[in-house]
Amino acid sequence: MNAAIVLVGAGLATWVLRIGFIGLIPARTLPVRIRRALDVTGPSAMAALIVNDLMHEASRGPAVITGALIATAVAALVMWRLQNLALVTVAGIGTYWAASLVA
Amino acid sequence: MDATIALQHLERRWLDADALRDVAPILVGLVPFAMILGVTMSDAGVHAGVGVFGSFVLYAGSAQLAALALMQSGAGLGMILLSVVIVNARMLLYGASLEPRFRNQPRWFKWLGPHFLVDQSYVVASERADLQEPARFRRYWLTVACAITTVWLTTIGATMALGPVLPKDLPLSFAPIAVFVSLLLPKLLKDSRARRVALVAAVGTGAAAIVAPGAALIIGISAGIGSELIKKGSD
Image 1 (tube, each protein chain N blue to C red):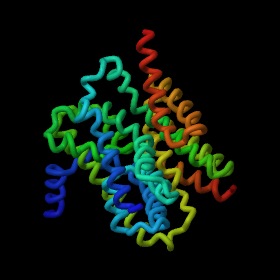
Image 2: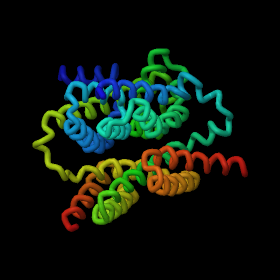
Image 3: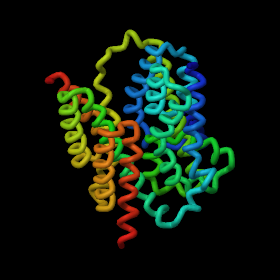
Image 4: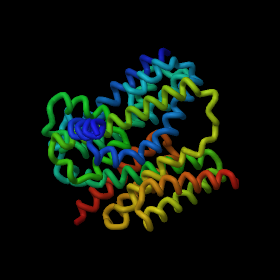
């Protein structure tokens, strides 16, 4: 199958999802209870994204997931103590890289 | 001196400094993901031009990887689109959550702006409480979109061109996790509601990843939001 057709079709389908509750059925028409619950989409999404990425790492073997879990703990510690986003990224990637060398 | 004035003018007219500051660390995490996508498309024999154009049109890395894998396995267009819809279903929730920001916008922005709705743009925009003013949100959103699109498409294009000479095991796959940890942790430290929904979403995603990996994200996020709905119902 032609890759261009697949990607354009997938792009159209995704655009419909993106505008679904913005332009097609505006979210303000949803019940108030649901709209209020949507306030927690941010933390839910971030937690889900972290776990989803860690599960992907787990599929690459026990050594990889061990390194990723240690690096996650280091990243959380650096964020908690120093609250510097760039340092968190550097410390996390550095730990992950060091763990991959040891494994 | 002229260059400084020109930059300040450009920033005042087009770019939002807060948006650039917010999105910069996230761009680091985008690079390895774009590289994986570029290599996958090269291996699948996709022309570089089609790859870059398709990446802009779809603008969703996980769904693009799923679509390419299904295409290579000979699946039909219907099956591929169904898979893309499942992987990207969380965009519906992101859109619903950001709808108040798009409400009083010009029509062109209301219909075209959401095209740039991805995990990264949603996370940075939803974290700011100072984007109520429509023009401010528009400038912020377009600056974030511009930065993400530039890094995303440039990296994909470069990887498709240079694919064979890149080392296979760059340690960058951890970058997105580090970014999401740094964005989530401050919320967890000060908000018990965030701790509860994050725990439910994390457990839900982990469990769903075992039985339905493609739908794990939407199941996990829905579980977190659902727990808030149930809590509010019982209060």
